[in-house]
Image (cartoon, rainbow, N blue to C red; front, side, top):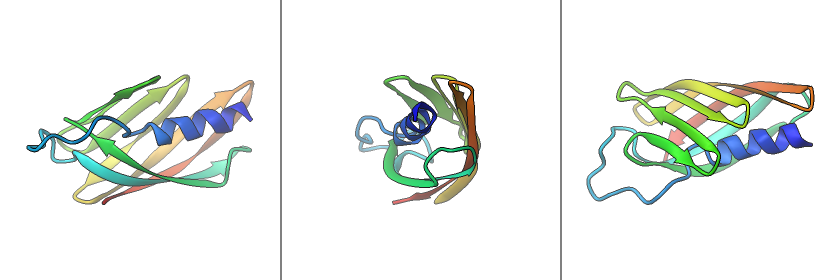
Length: 113
């Protein structure tokens, strides 16, 4: 289902970028394990990916977004959106999107690796 692909691509790409430089520029740079859970809609029930943040930037492919110095996460990808908060070594938030008239939404959780 296309809405499932959008959701998966959003979170697989959520932080998937170049390697972290020797001296991180953002307190949230590094590898993160992100688990995405669908609460409404017909998307996959749950997916988990290991991803990376570099210089607080979330970009690459069709993904754009950021992790602010205070940990605020904002991401968009092909009409799907995610936001939330990182704090220390963990974080969480919400996501939503629609494809071909089918809406899906849920929560995500992240932990630094």
